[in-house]
Image 1 (cartoon, rainbow, N blue to C red):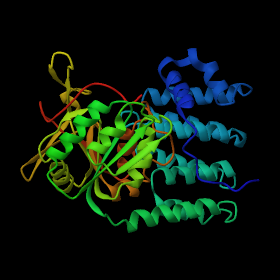
Image 2: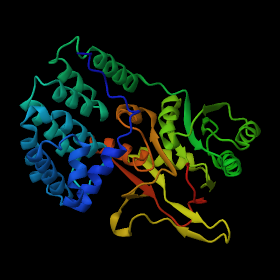
Image 3: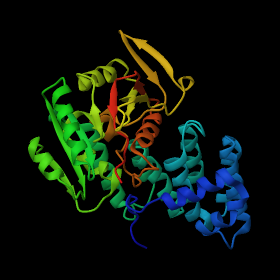
Length: 383
């Protein structure tokens, strides 16, 4: 058998995530598709147990969900299917609204405890701890496993922990942007960044997803040196390359359709991260601009009731759903949580929930700076 390697995040989990999501929302109407997707068409009892578990989680009954998943996993031949389902649960559709992140810690440890000699169970617990950047946990488990079989994983873990603990920033800020055939908006965005940044100690990284317009001329006009050219359009998955390459102490992702930023936006985000250290990911609430009329409307992805207002040292923070239109996280924190390891980012599996989910495992959260005119953008997407 080949050596067990860390999960390759390129294969897209979306088909499995969609199957699980459909079943949780529509129930037995999706049962056959769910059983087929996870290789359980010839195992009706296992398929039923899995279905019951997912429906329990949909009803926010985590206790029943965990009990049923453990019953499902009692048969060792089902572990490959469980591994795929479990990865979807804690990577793709897990949220605070469904179940607390610590629930998955307890469950994956218990499942491994039931099958400590099964390679799939061993891989699952290592994958879980690696995904969340829980380096000490992963290495402790690794020490109990066949050394040669999991040697590639040990090297990955040691390197990940060393990068997180030893990171030394070269710049104060890294502004990270992705673009795809929006040269005119990018032009306006880059000009706004130059005009509104409060610090001069920054770098701008731009990832170009196979643009065919005059993006190259815009980048040359603004003197952007750190450009990453992608031969294909990977949409927001290209953030994995950019975040990894950034040299700053604080990473600030900025959508390329941002047309107005608060003055000193970088210093504002940096100060809030320092004053509210329990919140590791902080962004501005955006305001939509109608490109035709110029009308402005606050982007409300959640009602005021979803936010908790905090005040400290003269600053105000709103704890709740957070957008990445212009949001900050320290590079050290990003490395500490394992970066974007473990799946392919997409419109469904966005960077914001991945960061928030992994910070949550450490008892930290995400928050917004809210206001009517803090940040303005034209609607659009990266393809």
